[in-house]
Image (cartoon, rainbow, N blue to C red; front, top):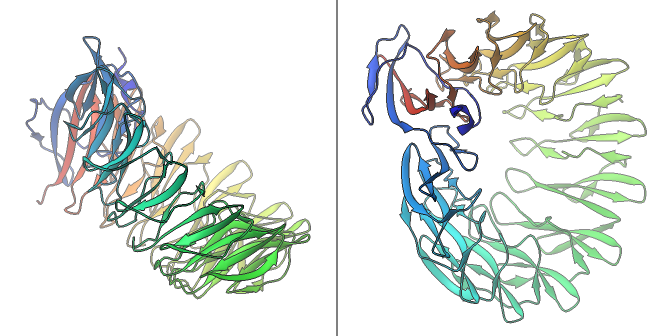
Length: 548
């Protein structure tokens, strides 16, 4: 039996010394030539999974379903739960902080939710795929059927019963303190916030309830006779022939709301209940500035597209880029990509760049301090990177997601193609040429002083750190390259033959059959943690700084 099927094969973690014996539940240590000592805790033997395994966001936990005696059993971190007649496919979820786990199970034709190993109330049905943890991981909510009615259950407590719950309309506020959903009783629909229903409506829009980031406000689209309107905190707004699907948007501070509305065959932006000018179409990308004071969106009139910023339309163009417009982090600057005929340009702070033949999809990007802007452009057969208005670095291609700024905004890096070769350019200086570069490359360290990327050299892969090439491997795990929070250490996953190792500061670690996705996870005290499989045994591996 090939135990590597249990989860997605290999992905970053850190391993530093030879294998040592382990006893279930007891950490074992071994000397390490590195700055870490290694603890390996045996979690148990891996079982053949019924469904693909689920790995937590931090890569430190894994859960899957297996069969025992004709029953379904969930295995979480090597520990088996209770036996059930069925466990819903795709129902296992970890909380955002990776500390909690839940899934839907069936027992004697009744459904229940198991949270952190504890079975909940039995129901006639529970929507698989409907389990929802709050962003702070403290709460869990789901929709359940009891007889002919549906009920929302949060943290094991039932709310009021309804004839129908708007499917998958459950939503927590971003702070995790408030829960909202849409439900029907008889022939009327309601939006319920923290268990309290609002006013009745003929229908609720498909976007369902939208909670402001601070959780203090709620909005939703509702139908009244043949008209549509947006309700904000229980107050209905003006009526229209239609409301743009998924355009209702709160500002970051939660105090403002905007959406696109239709009157006959024209569209207007409604901001804080004030109706703006009419257009033939308004794009659903509506953007508030980080400070909530400004608003920008793209709209079309006749055959021209405009970016409207703070209520003022800019020049007309043939098209506006799909990721445009954007604000800088300080909210003072704007940028967008536009097409004019067969050419493209970038407009920054209302000033248009020269015309180019193409612009990279990731462009433009503001630096973290908002003072700089960069993007990739094509002129004739050549590509360039424009930084602060200056086009530099002629090449034949620029990788997606490039260019990038360092966290301190002082440095710029990008992956460039030269003929059939690729190289990373840092601060205008091209590095060595390779046959390919790894996805997600390059990356800056948190302190902005270091740069790393993975590269292919013929049939081998290497990692280049601060311009120095590391050892060759059969492959490097995709997007596994990481700096430690203090920027001193670099880790990545690599393949040696049929085994997987994690390399730290250039030193290959122990060989495993697979290493979990999502890691490695650096903790605040410098520890590294991940899961690994060796000969069908699941281990939790920790790398503890030797000085500690």
